[in-house]
Length: 442
Image (cartoon, rainbow, N blue to C red; front, side, top):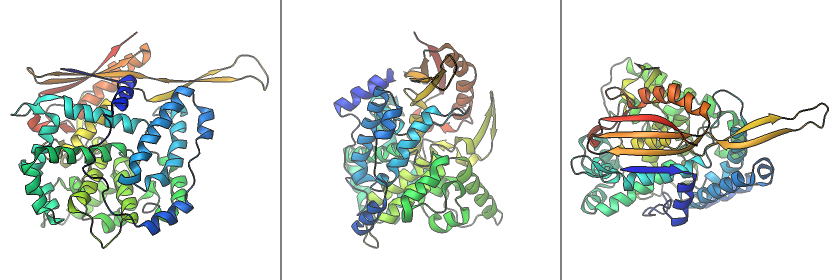
């Protein structure tokens, strides 16, 4: 089986409506309209005129389309996003022209493209597990009946959804739509914590909605105080709810949390996601338990998609494990597993700029900027017989092909897909190996 992803496949999927969620959950919580309108009146309006001047027509069209899709669904799924959007659009352009070696990545277009990739993987990749079903079938089975996902079901029961769990088990279509809705939410906003250098301006635009502290200096004591019992922090404890940890654990736990807040964008993104939703949520009026659980589960996936660097460090083919409890196993966290896999695959059509200084002397000499994509497309090959999944990234420029073929992709494969110790453990899916490769296209 082979799947192909590209800018064209994304546009075709949009045209067919394949990137729309089932909308089993139309809104995850009741919004406090007084707070929302007060914040809207203080927020900076979204103006696209300045960014339009700085982008090529094709790139601006893509940006505007992705932003339109995001804002459309944010109205009901994540209302506070509208207060972030102006600075996020500014950061989108800055990301494309950054000159650092580790350049900033776009997210306004990347996140809807992740929805396209994730929905395609979930619905079209088949031949997994004992049943040989789709990736989506295996996700819902792990969630509803898997022994390692019991903590999820217990958390859901504690929120008051015991009867709903029984109903979900009786209707496979219902639980699949629910999973797709929660995946859509997490994929569309998974890079909420990414643009670190612009968080000061984001905080200014948010006013009273600003996350705890400033994002680069989130205080672990405050996070533990405000979110210590929330689901998203469970992976830091090895997915355990243990009432008797050793006395030394509190210090280690706090150190892991502090490093995650400073070195990743996933953990601060999860905190910001929950914080902004909490501030607009009507309380103590209770939203439906299954809906509230969807927010908590999405926050955990937002955090875990970027925790690979906290789990281990890859140096060539050598892997040094730093925090073994963070290994992301499909059997105990299927939503986070699929989002992390999706994020790795969606490297195509991510824009960056190249500059050509003009020739000549004097103040009228011009520099030309050209926007392009390093990765043109991605092919997914699933060999059901040999149980090997291959991710093949396509490059036009020879230097991009060589750099990825010889360095970046081998290190990425070691970190994420080492068969015995990689960050992503396929578990019961029955995948023996996952390879990352590059090919040069013309």
